Amino acid sequence: MNILFHLVLSISFYLIAILIEKLIGPHLEKDEPPLLNHKIPLIGHVLGLIYYGPNYYTSVAEKDRPPMFTLGIFGTRSYVVNTSQIIASIQKNARTLSFAPLIPYVAERIAGLRAELCRTWFVDDGTYTKGMGADHAKLIHHTLYTIDGSLDVNAAVLAELKPLMDEIPSWGDKFGIYKWMIHVISQTSFGAVYGPDHPMNDPQVEKAFWEFENNAGSLLTSAIPWLTARTAWNGRKKLAAGFLKYYKAGNKQASNFVSMRRKLFEEHGFRVEDIAQFEAGMSTPILSNTAPALFWLIREIYSRKPLLEDIRKEIQGIITTSVDENKEPQHTLEVAKLKKECPLLIAAYHEILRLNGIGTSARRVLQDTMLDNRYLVKKDTLVLMPFSPVHQETKAWGANAKEFDITRHLDKENRRPAVTFRSFGGAPHLCPGRQIATLEILCIAAMLIARYDVEPTLGYWTNPKLTYTMSGIATPSHDFDVSMKPLPGTAGNWNYRMGDVKLKFPLASN
Image 1 (cartoon, rainbow, N blue to C red):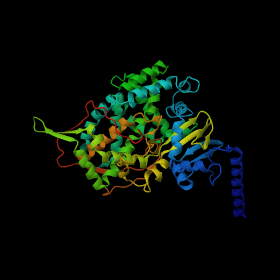
Image 2 (cartoon, rainbow, N blue to C red):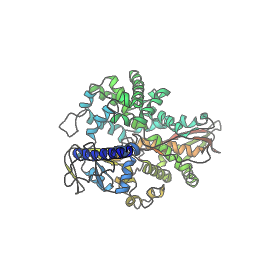
Image 3 (cartoon, rainbow, N blue to C red):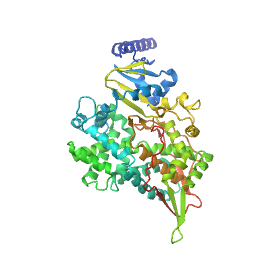
Image 4 (cartoon, rainbow, N blue to C red):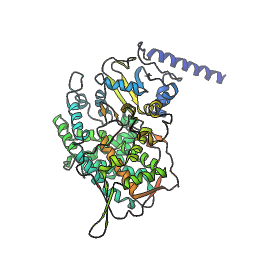
C-alpha cells in the first residue's frame, strides 16, 4: 500500500511538472530553433547545467546534434549554437546580436558595482556606442588590443618573470605545480598591469582572488549572494579592500591602461571605492584563463617525452649564450624569435586551448534576426555559443577531434576558418589581452623547458578531471606535486630579450 501510494504520488508530480512546463514554457514561432525537451520536465536542463557545467552543451550536441536549439528554463528561452556555420552568421549580424548590453549586468553581479553606475554604462538609443561603457571599450582597444598600445605591458611581463623563474629552486624538492603556476601568473600579470605595488603582493589578497575567481559563477544566479554565494562574496570583499588600499596609495607605477582607466572612471562619477570594487570583480580575466592554460600546456608537453625533446630543441635554437667579465655564463631567450622558430610550441599551445576551452560566448538579441537563412532568434533573448561543440567538430578538426594532436595546427596549406577556434572569443568581441596572455604563457613555458626537468613525484603524469568555473579554460580538479631540477649546462644568469619588436603571435582566432 505504501509503495503504491508513493508510486501514484511520483506519477502525479511528474504529470504536474509536465503540465506546468507546457503552460509556462516558451511557445516558439515557426522558424525558431527547435525546443530541446528533457526527460525530466521543468528542472531537467537546470540539473544538467549544475552537474555538467558548460560541458552539458557538448553532451547535448553529441547526443542530438542539432545545429541550434532552444533551451527553455522556467518560462524563459535561450538559444544554444552547436556549429561554426551558425556562429559565422551571428558574427555577420553583430549590429543586432551584441555582447554590450550584458556588460552592465555582469559588472553589477560579478563586481558588485553600484546599480546606479551600471545603469549609466551606456547612455544612448540602444546602439551601445555612447557613454562610459563605449569609452571604456575604446580605451581597452587602444591600450591592450593594439600592438603599439601593449608594448609597455609586454616589457613589464618579461621583467616580472625573470626573478620568478630564477627562484624555482627555493620552492624545495617538491611542490604543487598548479600552486606554483598560480603564484607566478598572479605576480607576473598583476605586476605588469598594476605596477610593483600591486595588491597581489599581499598573500591574503592573492588567496582571496582565487577563492573569488573559482566561485564567481555563483554570484550570477544568487539573489542573496552574501548568504548563498558566500565564498565568492567574501573573496571579492577582501580583494576589493586590497585594491582600495592600492588606489588610495596612488597607483603611481601602474601601466598606461590602469592610469587612463582610473581617469576615465573618475570623469564619469566613480569614487575611489567604486573603482576598487570594479577592479576586484573585473580583474579576473587577467588571470583566470592564463593559469589553467599554462598548466595544460606544461602537462601535455612534459608527459610526451619525444614532443618535449623536439620543443626543447626549438627553444635552444633561440637562446644566445655568452660569458661576462667574471666568466659567468649569460643566457638570453630571444622572445621575438618564438613566433617563427618555435612552431611546435605554438601548435601545442593552440591544441591545449582547443581541447580545454570550455567557455561560452553570449549575445543579446536587439531585434528579431534570421540566422543562416533558417533560424529566427527573437528580440530580448540570449544566444549562447559554447566553445566545446565547435572545438570538437569533426568537419573542421578531423575524426580525432577529441585527441591531442598538434599536427593539425602545423598545416599551413589548409588553414581552418577562425570561427572554428573560439578560445579567445569571436569577432567583434575578441579577448583584448590575448596577445599579452600568450606572450606570458609561452615565455614561462619556454624558459621552464629550456632550464628545468619537471617530474611528478608519483612517477607519472596524472590526467586531472576538468573543473568548470567562470574561466574560458577548464581548471584541473586537483593539484599534484612535482620536482623541478635544473638541466645540465644551464648554470648562469638567464634573461628574456624582446627589444622594440612589435610581436604578434599567429593566433587561430585572429
